[in-house]
Image (tube, rainbow, N blue to C red):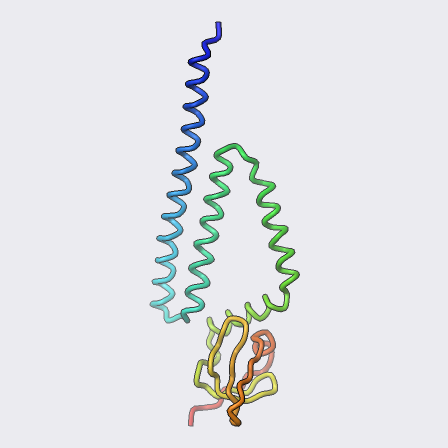
Amino acid sequence: MLDYNNVMFKTVFDYGLNIFSAIAILVVGNMAAKILKRVISTILTKSGQEKTVISFISNLIHVLIMTFAIIATLAKFGIQTASFIAVIGSAGIAVGLALQGSLANFASGFLILLFRPFKSGDVIEAAGVTGRVEDVLLLTTILISTENIKIIIPNGKLYSDIIKVYPES
């Protein structure tokens, strides 16, 4: 004879255990993401990296760990995660193709901030213009010409061209 009380207790216990495990995965994932973000930020700060690079890398690490934790949580509930991963990958490719020019500028800006061929205050000649570097952003670099004109250059164009950095006078 089937005992419905035992079956119901086992079902509730199993679901409760899965919910507890899922919450534990999310909590541990969040804690790990925060700790690793802090460690990466500290290491990059001590190595003298730009604030923009530090912020980007540490936030990227945090998002990747949380994405992994969320996918692991969904898998704990028995949801097939392969389709989620495929959708995320496809969306990434579609966004990458749609933003190809902006991503080239972003990658170039990241490399400029990382390798520092020039810094704010330097006088450079690149992409057919000459000026004092006012600011280096992720997508663009802002120069001030000798005529006091603001020049905004996309980092993709700037990084793919010859850059002349004039000595300080």
